[in-house]
Length: 229
Image (cartoon, rainbow, N blue to C red; front, side, top):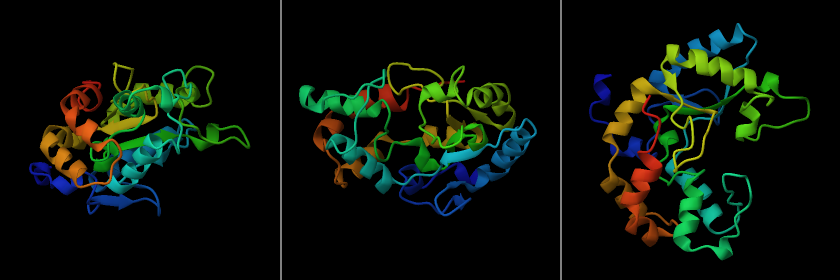
């Protein structure tokens, strides 16, 4: 872990992926998390849970694309009740806060670090159904209910926890999102608002000036505001 004492800013912001181990062409995780993940995956298999990653490392540019699509109305913005928000009826600041409930700012996503993964078990999905990554899938009577119960009981044994275990007034509850604490804690501690602002200033991000004007509030409500375990 000594190499983590001074993490490159590019890794923190999702610009550099040299620390990522690629499980497939599209799915990568932090190389120092691989062993823990594979052990958890093997343990889950003994309970007939085919643990897989729906989303692992995600770079700055991909997060920027997701953000801009929502801001411009190309992708729906949903509230906590899964209702589509009419972006023409809210202020730009309210639109930004609404996006942040489900989508992190480019440069501020924990997926940039490679320490955070969205997980599911494809063997629990009914035939001809697709993963939605919505809370109901992981709740009682949802297809991944058994996976949720197992992860809540055993994930900490492998170093993982749920940063968004419940809604705290910022990011929505994400029962699929696991964070590998031994690494993620280092990234969290070295996260810099100044570096984030600099990256945003140099990016073609929609709502840029309003975001920067409210960056301290965004940091407290949507970046720092997580499960402290």
